[in-house]
Image 1 (tube, rainbow over the protein chains, first blue to last red):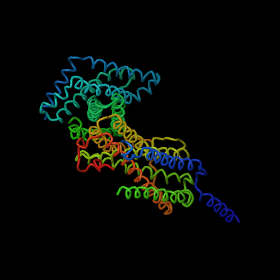
Image 2 (cartoon, one colour; image 1 turned 120 degrees about the vertical axis):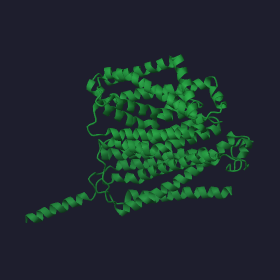
Image 3 (cartoon, rainbow over the protein chains, first blue to last red; image 1 turned 90 degrees about the horizontal axis):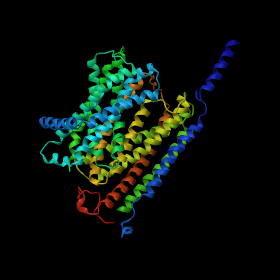
Image 4 (cartoon, rainbow over the protein chains, first blue to last red; image 1 turned 60 degrees about the vertical axis):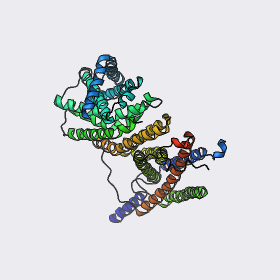
Length: 59
Length: 223
Length: 237
């Protein structure tokens, strides 16, 4: 009887182990992806803003 | 090339000694910096003694920015650099003379600061004075080699006073780490025998940057 | 010819965005959670590729700098300028990502980790590079001196890395590498390629901007150091 109890406790713990010792933290993940993608978008905009204009506009 | 470098070095040293004003100002500046560290960080003597190496090298680094900036300004003011270039000297000789001159200046500063540091921070010398001298010399060389190249560049750019430290400081980080660690070990003792690795790093840094300086300096000053 | 190049550039950017979308989905949802770090580890799918791109940028900048000193050409100078800027972009936000990863895992935003510390030092070095370029008026001097700077800065990277690692090794236990789930490797690879495509598109666009700036600065064709291989600057569009 006690072995079954022990086994069920182990099974319980094993189930919890699957998702990692650090729980949650999704706000950091979202923040990181936002920072990364936003930086690239802003840089792309800055590139577009500085794009070479055709020579005709200088005449 | 070496004899030319020697002649140029002697010219610079003579000039330095004749004016002496820059030297005095540098010494006072470095001393003031050391004092400021004590005030900023509090009178806890054990703490000060433990970090004395760090303060010493920071004071030297800040003073070096001033001295490096000056070393080419003197030439530029009277357009002497053009005069030097007209003489058929190797630009590498110019680099050597400038870099060695800067090293000697910094080493002189270090030696002046040393007794002040000992008095202010209450440090003792655990290892031999020769090893301390060696570490000081290597550290000063490490600052001077890239510093000479950068000061030649920065002198012709706008905002030269800000540009030189901006360029020099990130580059010098490994040398600073090694010099501070090595100095601290020499002052406080080296039970785990780490001094050789830090001195090794400092020497490698010097080897690479004196070599790069010799190779690249001609491209910096050529027309 | 110009149109073909333009569509190639646009295609590269689109490819990058699409791959990035796939990579984001894989990284955020498809890859399994980590045994130790749970879901927070997913930051590596943006952090690591960003750092890789930054290092590639440094390498290309170095090659372009050396190239310029051997044979002056506005092509190499413009390449050096663009890789420095794009490399700084990826490096800075990559570093921020590293800090955002540090907070939940180490408990602090910054713990002087050797890799992040070395990267921070190098980013300041390349900021100096860009500052130098901004502060020199003469295009030829600017090209030579920033080439010298690029070489010196790049040679410093391994030295900084070793010195910071030694500096830290007395205080920190190096983390042991764990066996990685193959799904994670795939997700990382996809994201890395996405970043690579975008990196190339950015560098290419920035390169064009640099070339156009050179054209504006040098009104006369005979002031170019390399009239033959000037990257089309003497052609009028």
